Image 1: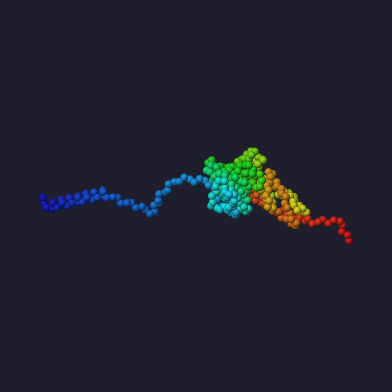
Image 2: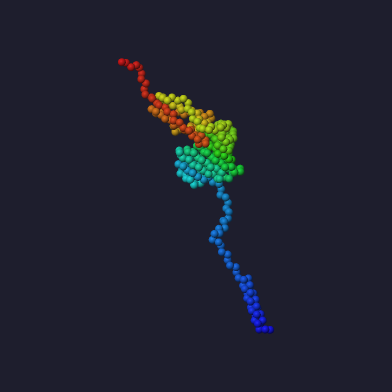
Length: 305
């Protein structure tokens, strides 16, 4: 065999051996670790169960208080969470907004006392001791929202809509629906209040037949003397049935026909009597009738010259 052929054969054999060794090394060498990109997000945490619905304080304006377990009161602040059976109250000129679960917003007006009775995925309810609340309810399946009107022994309930409940210092309450519809149940019957309607109820009477809410809140007075010799006067008038009427700082309520009457103390000289009317939806109107008292002694007999 020629010498050149032997050399070429040896070179081919050497190359074949090198190829075999390289292939075996690749088969047994460990795979290089895969680097994680810096922008890759970590795996999301395991899903947790939904939190139960709660009563959250969203807004507080003025003095709003919550009752302590021992009976005392402390200031309530936005961002706090209320418990079932908590009682809150608002001072004059104050108001607050609550969120009950995901379905209900309750706006609590001034001079109102309210307690949280239940908050759940199917039913939330509050109890109105005295004052006014406006509630906005977002429909969600079989969910219901209820306002228990304590002094009137009545219940206003809805699945969807916005309605107001007013009860100040009496056993009579007024309920008005701005949207949706509300079922008003009293001790002696029940009615369904449609959007733009209202009704009145008391502990001794059935809910009145729903009537349209007037476009404006009116206030009229019966004839009253502008000058009087007496130190008191009976101020009478008419307004929206069931409305709250505050006369010289004292609250009364219009009856089922809208009439109101209250005795007012007067001082010597000119008296301006502030009268403020409030309806279940929070509309107000006012007037200041004036009465002058002249209570000097009468002159008896004739004058002699």
